[in-house]
Length: 156
View 1 (tube, rainbow, N blue to C red):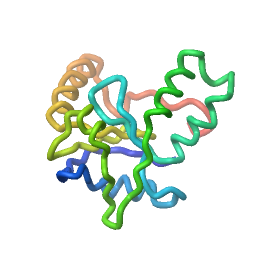
View 2 (cartoon, rainbow, N blue to C red; view 1 turned 60 degrees about the horizontal axis):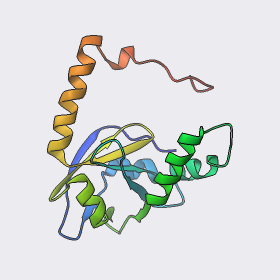
View 3 (cartoon, helix red, strand yellow; view 1 turned 120 degrees about the horizontal axis):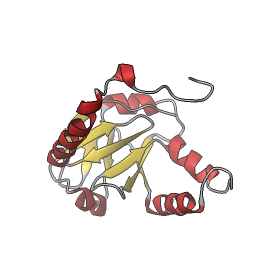
View 4 (cartoon, helix red, strand yellow; view 1 turned 180 degrees about the vertical axis):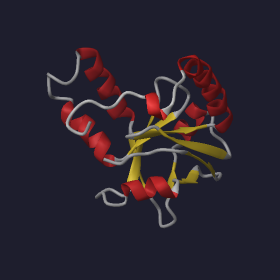
């Protein structure tokens, strides 16, 4: 599974084509499907995105009664039913669906924001507003990479 970090702003053309950041494409390079999977977010007016391996894991796990609560299973089904595969063109671009662009309020510029195993595609000003709120919440606790908890499990 790919790891996505950093933020990158790119131009969106009139047809909804946008270049996926080179670092994100490199993270996906060894996979069978050369493209991304996108879905409208339920949390914000943003597009959620991941590599094909990540969405395949969600799809495979949906039938495992030990992994999801009933509510989580319904959420996963809803996400899967709204997801769309977008292959890279020869220039590393994808064509975002118009209804997804409208959902996120994206026109002209898109901000790709890596959040680990997934990433989001934002309207840049909306992300700036959201990031200011996040910073205000994180600052009192002194958030830093050094203080983040380690992941649990075999890789920790």
